[in-house]
Length: 407
Image (tube, rainbow, N blue to C red; front, side, top):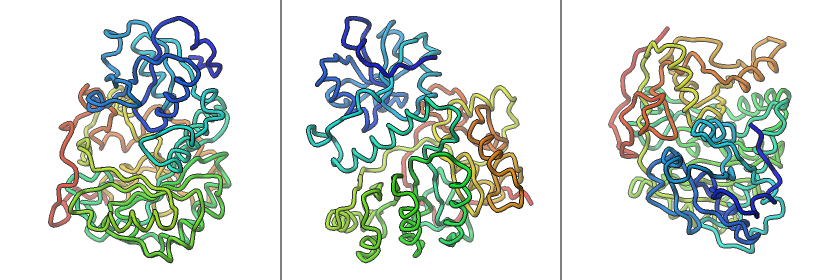
């Protein structure tokens, strides 16, 4: 399906125009559409809870309900999940899609108001542009995002952590030199990466987290770095000053009383002029159980198709995985060891690039998918999903949860 970059047809009369994705980048798309006289009717999103909200004064519509409300429509893909969007909307019978590249080419951030800071919006738009450009160059080995697991230790013990931290009995930090060495291998075999995300656990529990950030920033000053934290630990000011660069950002998930140092962290980030976003923890999708389903090939393909994290490549202990669930399930030995689930970056094999490309281009599923409940954008439709739906975030347990170990 062809996606258009030239947005001039959108200025002409025709079917309603809808922006895809209730994400921060779509605010910018809406702003520039107003400026250029392009009338947008609504925003659509696959998460049903978004339909109770608005974005940039536009009503958000749950995507599966689109055909009834808009039998015909033109779509501007505001989010980064280009291929997923096209597959979903083509399945609903639509065939006219536009990339926001032309609209956002000279976007003046300071000219408009946004729900996030100008600096943070700038970072999101940077990743969005790179993702859409990569879509038009299928020959590239492109990774929008790499999750770097700097630790499996966490200051919280959430019962339903999607990264499976609640199963670790002996969580550990990853040595920062090992992480940087692994990234050297990835750099040598990947054409482009848009962003790195430091995750855990709680990444700030690893005392070497700032060294990791500094090391990545020095080699990837054109990439954005996002540090995902639960606001329980405030960074030291000298750590923040050690990488006083424009491409470092913090994502603070606020769990209320549990995030005891969120205010202090926010103050320090503002003081040191570091970009951040802070938002309250919302309900989670129930996706943290590990068990073999013995699904058919067709059913596992549906799980993979619907998955919202299948492009979150994850680095853990020198191995590259397609998602954080398989990474931690394998690390815990909660699934059988299967080389088809990962690329061992430190193996003596001379075909690492070939293996990485195979992983990146895989559009079916991985063996580890059969142990996952599924993690769809829309868990209410039951496609590729065996979980309970939306559950409260951040519920704590006192000790690690037992599970089956594969030796």
